[in-house]
Image 1: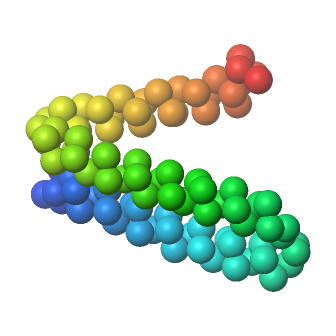
Image 2 (image 1 turned 120 degrees about the horizontal axis):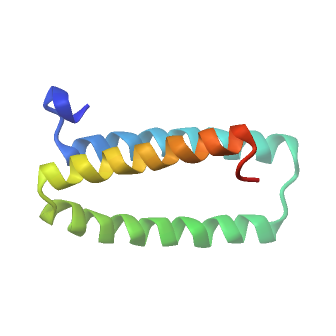
Length: 94
């Protein structure tokens, strides 16, 4: 997407909104089907607060990161993730 002129902050924001919508739908489904207890909801709330704080910190780092470095880092993460998936599929990593 960065090769098509999308700004790195908008790319991250789009992915964050997408993840939030998907997770919200999952939560609604889990609550309606599986009577989740209070301890699980508390854990989810604490994780959400942690994610919010992490996003604020990440926003500061991202604003200072040059586009080329972001592109290289994103490519590296995608490459490592793909390699891990291939190794797990091949049975090298369990």
